Image 1: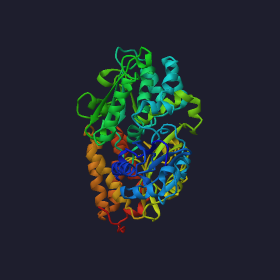
Image 2 (image 1 turned 60 degrees about the vertical axis):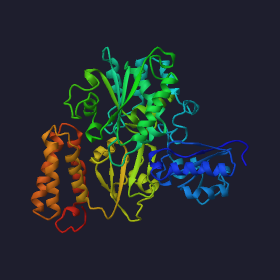
Image 3 (image 1 turned 90 degrees about the vertical axis):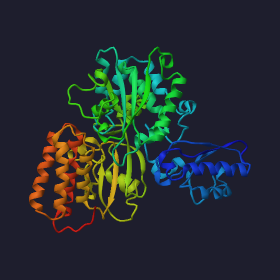
Image 4 (image 1 turned 90 degrees about the horizontal axis):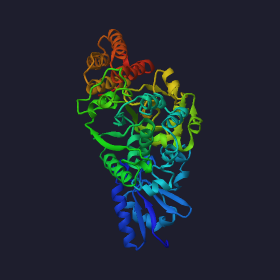
Length: 520
């Protein structure tokens, strides 16, 4: 029997909770008490190996040992097998960091996620937290901005715009009040990296935003979080309170005399509010609708003030960059796609989850080698990368490296890093119709190409599927896509043609009158 309390980690991540993690944690505590074995259960974040959730880890003298997926009914047998000492069990995977899908990753942004107690400042600092902030406090605003620019960091929200340019613009714009806005309205299908980080390592986001405040002169920050993420909302609010109590937020950040207040704002679940100007409208208490640009938010954003808008993963990458240097970050990746990207693998896939890898890994490596192919066991037919507005790619493009430029050249986009897998039963005409229907539902209605084009597009695709004037309707569909791409005010309407056109280009047989695939 262990001489002191054995630490057992059971995730509090929403994905783990959905498959019974709370019940597993309760039964572990009860079983340990029944057997008079001293244990301490820590509710950590997820390691991202979602097919193994709930993934229970036991701290042993030689490191943490993983067991999963663990159900409440499995707990007595784990104790019987001696899992408190890391002994073998049918659910055992050995040392957590030796699990193949985890070991091959390069974890920078997610280095602590699943490792620490998300709300413990002491645990965060013990694992390198606030080292980036300490480095930033030794430098002036221009030096911090220069480090971010040197890193080559690009916006991880999907657009891939160089982060350093935004930071520099806000920093050099004079104003009595400047703002930070973190866009955490993660609405793309197949994406969950923002949620995982906020639930599993919220202080990384806070630290990144504090560094951004030092660089730009902003003193007020907002995290715009979607209402569908109740656990992330609760965790972020607790983390902000903890950081303020520890002196990392408030009127005197770490004794520097600089100030930053952070506030959570909860959105109502509108997809369009993932677009930065719609988010700003919502933050101002208005209906979420796209603003025409210019002016850009960096010059005239929230309440007409200079505003730095970045995604969760963009802010969260900054602490590592300041702690280790922009050059070290830039050394990872490929071409102009610097650093790492947390790729999120979902859909019909054997091993779904989050995998942080340097840019440049091929799509086939991610789907087949790391993801293990389809969960159904049938052949992969299509993969959608970049959310509901991303392109559908066939297996013949699995040699495509995951980087911004290579994907753009292929008529696709990396986006927020979501990758959704489909097997050979998928009807690509149905998927194309879904893209148009999604746009029609989520459009803010401000511009005609998006509002009307998407509705007409869904109707045209349905006529094609019924075999009604297929040749004529295909011409109409292509014209609609061109109008939406060139005439829409924002990326929702402008990018909706991407999944439609990619389905037409790569899977034309599904649009042929003779096609008899089923779908709804």
